[in-house]
Length: 517
Image (cartoon, rainbow, N blue to C red; front, side):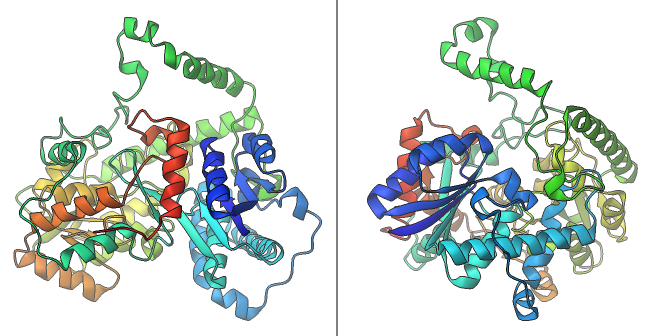
C-alpha cells in the first residue's frame, strides 16, 4: 500500500481520481485536505482517511485526530534548513491579511506552528506520496511541500495552461516540466518542415497573433470590463436562457449561494486584527465591513496609480513589464525572490542600455477587489512609488491593451505571466524571472542574476530573432504532454463528464514520465 496525502482536492471528481489511483496503483489516501463541505464525501469514500479543512489548515488549526498531540520543538539546524521556506511563506501570508492585520511576529508564529505540525503529520503518517491539486501556494501546503522535499517524499502537482482544459503533471515547479523535457528531446532531432498541431491549437495560436479584438477571451481583460465576458450563460439571448435546461441546476445553486451569503460569511482564512489566526472568524457584519474597507483601499490605490502613470511614447526603445496579480501562486512561490516585483523592475532599469525605457503595466484584475477580495494585500502606495522611482521607468495607463504594448516593445518581462507566452507568439523575446510553464521555450530568457539579465538584453539589442519552427515545436510538445482535462471547472473547454476528467487526471499521474517522441 502506498500511503498518500491529498492536498487541495475540493471538487467532487477528485474523489474519483483518488479511487482510480487506489485501484490501479494502490495509492491509499491516509490524509485529505479540502473544503469543509467535502468532509462527508471523503469519509464515505475513504473511511480511514483523516480529513482536514483547508480553512483550518491555513490558520494553523490541526485536524481533529492531531488536536491533542504534542508538537516537538524546533532547533537551530532545522530552522536554518527552512530559512528560505520561511521567507516565502511569510510573504504568502499576504492572502490572509485583512487590511494590515497580520504583523511580522504573528506571521513568524504561524510559520513555526505550521512547520511543527506538518512535521508531526509526516512523522506519524509516513506517507510515500503527496499529491497537490495545483502548485502549493496556500501557506500550509507550501510548508508541507518543502518538508516533503527535505525528506525525499514523492510529490505530484497539476499545472494549467492558458489553452483552456490543457493541463500537465509536475513533480516540482522549479525543475524542468515534462513539456520542457519532451521539447528538449525533440530539439535533438532535425526539426521537420511540417509540425502537425490540432485544429484547436492552430486556432488558438492564430488568435494570439491577430488583433486584440480577436484574441482569446482570457487575453481581453480590458480595464473596467468583465474579465471573462462571453463565457457564461449571461451572454446568451433571453430565449436561449429560458430553454437552457441543463444550466437550471447551476442557476438555482448560484441563487442559493447568494441568499446564504446574506446571512453567513463565506469560508475564509482572513486574519482579524488583534486576534490570532486560529481565533479569526468573521461574522457577516465584520465581513461586510472588511469588504467595504478593501474596496475603498483599492479605489484609492487605483487613483494613486493613475496619478503616477504616464502616456506611452511608442517611439522609445523599451521593455514592457506586465505585472502579475498578487497574492497568487504565479509569484509566490513561482517567482521566488521576485515575488517583490519592484526588484524585477529595478534590475531591468539598471541593466538596459542608455536611452532604453521600462514601461510597467498593472495587472487588470489587481484593482478589482469585488472579484478578488484578497487583492487588498498585494499592493501599496510604496510599491507603486518604487516601480516609478528609476528615471528610466514609468507606469502605463491601464486602458492600453497588451498587444499594442507587446508589438512595439524590444522585449517583454514578467515573473510567470501568460503575457510572456502571448509575446512569444507575436515574435517578441521574453525575460522571465520565475518558473512559468513555458520557461524552456524558444525565445525565453530565464533571469536570476544581474549577469543573466544584462546578457539577455545584449542579445536582444543585437537583434535576436525567435525561430518560429522551434516555437511551434514547443506547442507540439505541449499538446503531446498535456492532459485534456482541467483541475478547475471554469478552465474546462470540452464537454466532458466528471468521470472522464477523473480518468484523464489519474492517468496523468499513473503514466507520468512515460512518453514516446
